[in-house]
Length: 296
Length: 182
Image: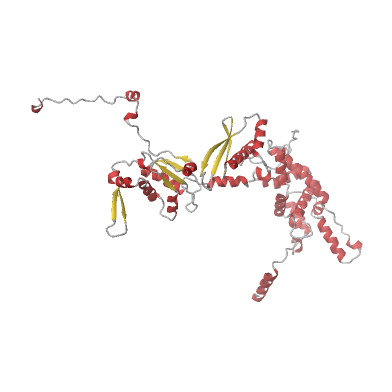
């Protein structure tokens, strides 16, 4: 036994770790059971055929086709009776984008449209979606050419799953699903991480002129260690002699910019102490999730 | 995350406090200094975190001991050589070096560990009002003096003196006639 383990360790050291195998090629895998389990784990009623097509990526079909051609069997025998998930993915993606934009607009009514688009784009973007998909087990079920499943393939598989849910249960339940799984990824995130604003002071001036408030005047509130290598300045923005916001910074310019950002966060209602978003389950007698939003 | 970075910078920055020691007891000045040099005035305090701030003490020449401590308080030291035990009163020491009393008081109030010398390096003592330019630029805020300075009689206006209530009528002692005073 010991000799065997030593030999295996030596082999590992020489050749490096073995390439990862997809879960479907590891023992104890039943695709139908896994798909059913996926559906019930999310407390959703998927129609299983649609869901199975949603997991099939075009790269997998191409790889399978090439493999079967390489086996040198006749063309009829190699025909795959599987469908792609491209259409489901397109429907899922467009629905996700529109739903997330509407939900962000409803949660933060004051946020301007490019802010809403950035937030929705971040939530529907590759990072967040692949993180959620990996933790929901979509990467085990997804059929793709290589392993581990690359990010863009995983993203399209998740969108196809959303499309499948849209077909099976309708837009309301799909909306709830997106709200419950992608919404909480906003928790702990700062607005300006998702939305790059180059000139916060200019944006603040615009917002204040729209609301007919006096223009902000920056004043130094506190300074520490000005002639050291670790200075700290607190700059406050006053409009009409009332404090709007104050922010810290390493230099005076950085502190002023941070103060402008803090003021924008307060104006748009995206502070850390805002009322938490509503994730309560939808009762039947409750009003629909998103009220019809009047055109801006 | 830029918001986290700026708030972290602000939390861990080292501030500079100014204390005016004019007519203040050096012990009370020293407690305030030691609290801020250790960082115990911050909620993020930990002994190993090096979270202390700088303290600048001015006007130490005009320090005020209460009671008879100027004559009775004794500062002892030994040069290490035989017969080298020296004892000086507070008044003599203050004459020789106006910064020493506050410095020794703060040194005795800091924890007896290796961080004490670093904290003493962050304490800046000046016998009078003049500060170098760079230290003056660094200062964040001035702390309130621990002792309320009482006013002299010459600093009261005549109206305030008249407005003060008469607590008793003073008794004027008359000299009685005796053999030797005629």
